[in-house]
Amino acid sequence: MSFVRQWLLRICSFALTWIYGVYRAHPAVWRLMARNYRPWMGRFARLHAWMTCQFAAIDVPAYGDFLRRNGWQFRWFVLASYPPTDKLSYVKAYPEEQRCWKGRIEIEGSVVDESSGSSGRPYNWIRSRRELRTVHKNLAGYTTLVFPSRRRFVINAYSMGAWATGTNTGIAMARVAMVKNTGPDLDKIIDTLRHFGPGFDYVITAYPPFLKHLLDRMDAEAFPWADYRLSALVGGEGMTEALRDYLERRFVKVRSGYGASDLTIGMAGETDLTVWLRRRLRTDERLRAALLGPDEHRLPMVFQYNPLETYLETTDDDEILCTINTTAVMTPKARYNIGDEGRLLSFGDLVKVVSADPAALAELRAALRVDRMRLPLLFLFGRRDSTVSYMGANIYPQDVENGLYQGNDQAHLLEGFCLTLEEYDDLERRPAVHLQLRSGADLGDDERRKLADVCRQGVLRYLAEVSRDFAESLAEDPTSADLRVYVHDHGTGPFAATGKIKNVYLARSAAS
Image (cartoon, rainbow, N blue to C red):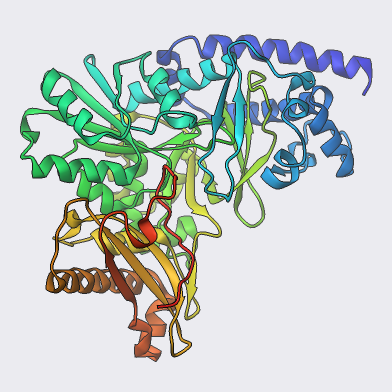
């Protein structure tokens, strides 16, 4: 690369770094940007993503080698000229040092996070002091926008230790709230609430299933919900609207964030607008077809994201590519493919589509008045391989969860579930749902059979509603309804301790 080209790039990088320094100075600036986001900012973010890739090509040994091996050629301002990276082709292929700027790990102030190993093995991710400051400011800005309060008390129930979410959430929240890092300890959380009393606006951060465990436990102890104001911020895995409905019987508001250990914990977040839209998509077939396509029955998570921080693209088969738009990241993420399936939509395009229905447009405007964020939207379907195929239909864990919780007056007995495809003595392969009872739940045989039947009917009903393929298979072959449901005591069967900190929804098949 010519000296003049490098010189021009570095001058532009210095200017961008200065602008971003002002923009990240305070959560109020983040809120101002989110509420006044305009399309030209997206073009600016794309330019910054291109520059991030180009600087990595110059200054990151592993990325330069990766580009050479993929036949890359320099092209001004063409982001798509840089081939996507992923865990297999890039992270596993090069050691940490070579994936850092100048091939050097910053020692002082750096923190090592570990992913949970859901992809088959744990990975280590090094984050610099500057990178962590950026992450914490972004998460703090989002929190103050979605959970406004002058007496905010965050109870951080994420798992502590080497995992990125728990530790970083606690540090970030301390910028804008009083924080107690309890970890996922039910007794400590309830004791904290009782000790400090109802004079605060509580935000509990946790994985979605744990929040249900907490609610059920507090109900069992006759906790005085009416005296308190509790909200929740969840992450780490998807959340269905059935589970949100269940949680919001007690919590004022439950919102989900999207992130990944590979990238950052604050890639995107739910707002009142996105929750309204997701709920509308459940029943509005015209809107769902216009936004997702006529053949899409899945209900994605819906987030708003900030391209100035995390520039997102999608591949031809709808896999998300992410470029972290800052040189503060010690190991740059350039067009990184985490394996999640999703689609992107600008705020303006959403308004255009919704405008065809005056009633829906009025609802959109009402939802927008709460958080007032005009950021683009991410429709997230989750990992492409998180399905069980049966009778020509794909069964997704989120569909099973909806069926288990929607209208089920015995949902409080459940702590979790997993989905398998099992081969029986007649050589037929059938899907099976394994249910884990809450700790201490003591059910007799008749009660277990009743619970299994209620859950089976709920799952079948929901699958038939959302999957045309599954509904047709039921009509053509009644034996397709042979969905097996097994009830297990807490911590037994497929739920025996595995050392994982998040629920596993797809288990290995087993013969019965």
